[in-house]
Structure formats: C-alpha cells, structure tokens
Image (cartoon, rainbow, N blue to C red; front, side, top):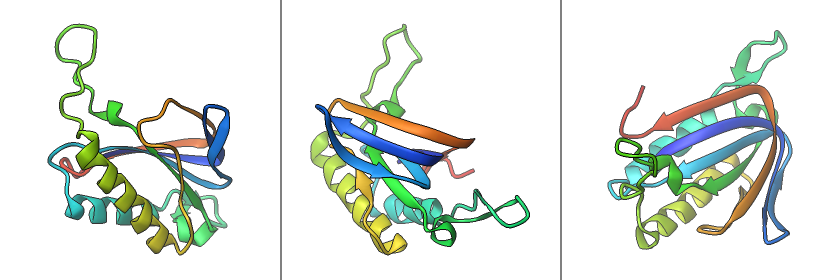
Length: 150
C-alpha cells in the first residue's frame, strides 16, 4: 500500500456534484493498493496514519497526532499512486490492484481508521471521477509505502 498524507485545515470530495465526504482539521489520505497488499499492510499503515505526530503542540513543535487534536480523515482511493513511468510518457498501472482485491482492502482501511480514531472516516467513491478540494496546512505532506518502510 502507498499513502500520501496531507495535513489540512479543510477538505472535501465531490462526485458528480454531490459531496461524499468533508472534514475540517485532519488528514486527506490518498491510498493506493497493489496486488501484493494484505491485512498486515493495512494494520501497519492505519496505525502509522493515526499516530503520525505532525500537528503542532503548545510550543509550535510537531508532537501531536490525530487523536490529540480531534483530527479527522478523508480517505480517497488512488490507483495512480502505483503508476509506472519507466517507459514512455504514458504511465502504466499494472501494479495497482484490480477492484475485486482493492475494494475490500479500501473498505477495511476505512473501518480500521474509524476504529482507531473512534469516529467515522469520510471517504470518496472507489473508482469514481472525484473532485478533491483541500486547504493544505503547512504544507505537510508525507508519503508511506508499506513495502519500503523508511
């Protein structure tokens, strides 16, 4: 799994003019799923997301995590995170999991993040043409790959 985590002060997702998810303070998480991903990747990544200390404390240092600031998550499926750009100028997406594998993991990630946060996670619509609006805070943007734990 790959995730791009953006700290935001506001974000929403629209599909065909209908808002499917909206948050204030928290993270927009763009989530890419590949065929090799499994529940262990999901558990590790969800814990990293919820416990990532990138919110400011009283001294202006990044020491607080989502639960400390009552933060929210807007989770967006994003198969393009597994784009292969090695050959030519048109990316290939063969590493991205097909919907029959990706949808259950995406839904499980939504549930797991909700459990860890103790509140609902907002989402986009898997496979839809989504319009994501956000106001970056910082900006703070972190990328995580469960197959390349740095």
